Length: 252
Image (cartoon, rainbow, N blue to C red; front, side, top):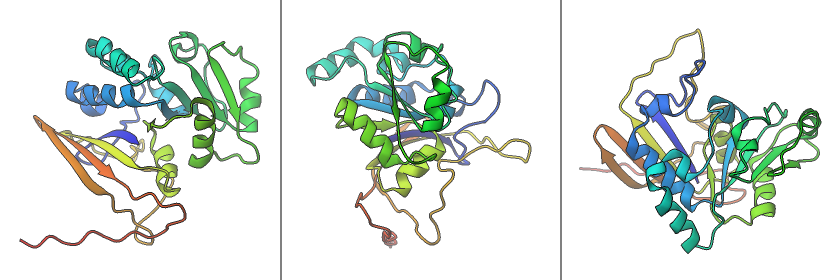
């Protein structure tokens, strides 16, 4: 499953120095952060791209980090489900452009898997690898497919629930390869706007679906808190399927 937040005009990152994370999109809305915590508390692994990791360099992808008020309840939930205390933090980086001195790698509070290519593995080899960090080198390509990432993650943690939290290129790959079952989307009551000086990405980047191959997920859940909408979509995941039917119009 994936979890993202977007403004009313579809921006998922302001793409400005120091203002590229989800907090600038939602204004650190507490209900959004609670949902993030709930999803992380049920996930065996949380997957993010290198760009997302760099946008929030002090972050740990755990439930307690994003919503500390319920840290005890989150820990009890994971214990009751027979899960590890924290989800595996997975960083996807084709080029290995990562700073291994940052907390996610050095704190020892989470186990980390870096999924990379041969080029990325060589780039990372010049840094000291912390004990809690492993590197999975995907052979034969400079592009890391969603399926390749999933194979590496499931080979290490045997995960049943894998949560993708960004960025748009990574989500685009998961959608393109029909490797996503559900999308949780927070729609924030903010108009961010765009101009030509710096691109502000939408939900998906690097992949085009419509008009040749559009995706039509089903809306299976909706909640509201103030001006925020919390949407849950389901995708029909069929390996090899390339077409999905558009939803029928509702007649009043």
